[in-house]
Image 1 (cartoon, one colour):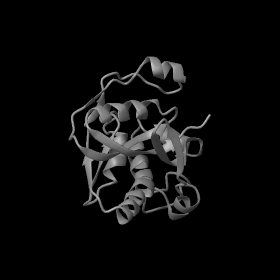
Image 2: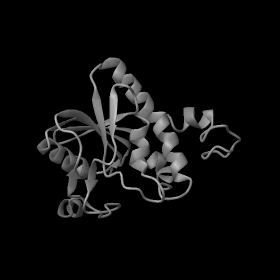
Image 3: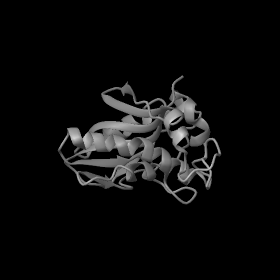
Length: 191
């Protein structure tokens, strides 16, 4: 197998050099209203990798990125916080044979962490990619929540741009008796 970044021979999806030099997560925090959103990568730094999400190699890339970021994060989180917590992915629709958000949440498995797959789904499948804030505000995702109530959750999405989707999801979950602790995203897009 070859490293998907530098193309050198590698046992894993990304060779150790690329993992250490190119794909080392650097957590950033943004605040949208009352929601803290932590992102592992700057979108512009890994844009080419993220654009593969609807291709055959996208599955391997997203899975590898999740292992480099979401897995270590949740391990450190449970070391410092002994309570049980739930993880809810934003709109875990299957496209191109897999759900890229479900790959991210799946890597957060732990005995204290309960993954609630496909419990927060959008009824409006509008594509926000490249759209301005006004378009996003005029076309909400219209989520439906079918999961447990009276729980504390970490929201997960792949990319955050304006925070509109995450804020809408948090508001619906609040109405459903769910407390969102914070949100995690693979990458953050900055203007």
